[in-house]
Image (cartoon, rainbow over all chains, first blue to last red; front, side):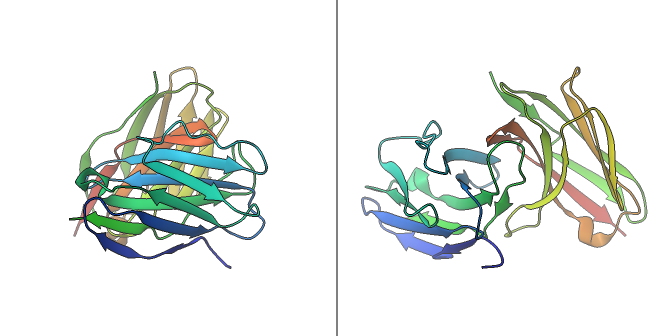
Length: 114
Length: 107
């Protein structure tokens, strides 16, 4: 596609439920990143994937968060047993390679945990 | 530690010039990015500095001093549509973002 796409655009869930957020990076981009942005806060790094290397999971806030990238393209961020503090906009970005390359962001998924 | 600091908000007048400053402390520095983010939208790329000096791109310019851990974004001939949050980010691969500077352009 022309840009990074994410789905769903909005997700409302009940506390304790699991959610899956999807990201389709720009075709040909080998690096994929997940960030989240809480209300009034800056972007917070969660995880990134680069080619076939092991992902950098250093930003994941707890073991309830996990992510996969299948076939070097589409990625899914899973949050288990959601909590109200997980409410945020989850942004995905991709870049051609890793270091120094511009990251292009998708429109985000707004997650609301009731 | 890693830290990015920028002012929380700024106000400027249409047609004027505004400078948004950013100071940073990061490990594995590989360049300084500026992004623009309108309310409810995704961040869009504005500029990237890896070497010291000024990079000019139309009405927007960005400056970097690696020895001082300092950057600024300069916006000229301000337009109402420039009202947005401006994000400073640095890092190696994964980016560390500042809180963003909310710029309001007044008529």
